[in-house]
Amino acid sequence: MIDLRSDTVTKPTEEMRMAAYKAEVGDDVYGEDPSVNELEATAAEILGKEEALFVTSGTQGNQIAVLTHCRPGNEIILESESHIFYYESGAVSALAGVQTRTLPGNRGAMSAEDVLHSIRPEDQHYPETGLICIENTHNRAGGAVIPLENMKQIYEIAKSHHVPVHTDGARLFNAAEGSGLPITHFTQYTDTVQICLSKGLGAPAGSILAGNSETISAARKWRKRLGGGLRQAGIIAAPGLVALTRMRNRLAEDHIHAKQLAEGIREMKGLRVVNEIDTNIVVVDVSETSLTPAEFVDKLKTEGVLAVGFGRNAVRFTTHYDVASNDIERALRKIQAAVK
Ligand SMILES: Cc1ncc(COP(=O)(O)O)c(CN[C@H](C(=O)O)[C@H](C)O)c1O
Image (tube, rainbow, N blue to C red; front, side, top):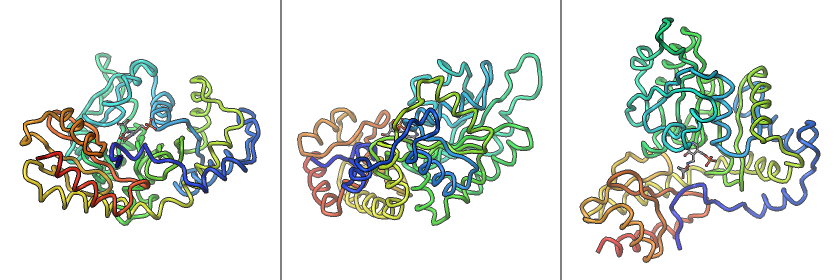
């Protein structure tokens, strides 16, 4: 079975498993787990932020950011198919008690103009704008890289209106690789950033939320309130450190594989690649097969390829560490067989 459902399916490498086995541990609620402390310090350094917090998932990192920046009754501005809006089970309302102001994106990027005109002026009828969220790369835009200039413009507008910015950077390392820019060029234009260790970087679990010391200290308290204060968490932080320090440079391979997959699918009658391939995601319109995305996903499975439905007419294929070069050729043959 070639699993192209998501880069969340990556299994830990031998090196990560050994790191977990050998991890030095302590009680992280007391700040005494050396592996967690090393991971957080290393992540803060790499992301160009004062401090970083190890969290259990990208969703937890995003939700802690919303809880830390906002208060109940605030409005948050975010893109209409962003993960925080689309895939986090309404947590921003359920947990933080905020309302969403979604804006259309162009390949996932909100226009700075739209953001400017969506920030609420002071008025007793209006909620305060508590946060602006950017997603880079943008999952439902097909792993699109949000241009640096766009982030810069939004950040400058946010700062001039004293509104914080959070970046859902679940795949920000893919954005850095896809744009050829150091990750700190992107993180300079956001107050907090969440990055996933468990996706393209291949860790078994975990994410990082990074920002200035005051914000991360408040975020740490929110993590505790959510039951995320962990004990000997070095067992999962140590493999996370391996992922963060050893797996960034191989993301280019996933991007090459995604491009190869897209090129092969473009040759197939009945399928249409709908996104420009910036990183590791290929979105394919299957409407000409007269199958629904769910039916096509089932057909693919019988041929030995796993993918996910992705909206009304499309399926998504995501390349990752556990998909090797020869898997792409094999997957293309199986996808071709599913189309027949
Ligand atoms: C941009 C972005 N931000 C946050 C998350 C949440 O990360 P986790 O909570 O799964 O660790 C995801 C996961 N994305 C998953 C996937 O793509 O298969 C599913 C859709 O939740 C994401 O794509």
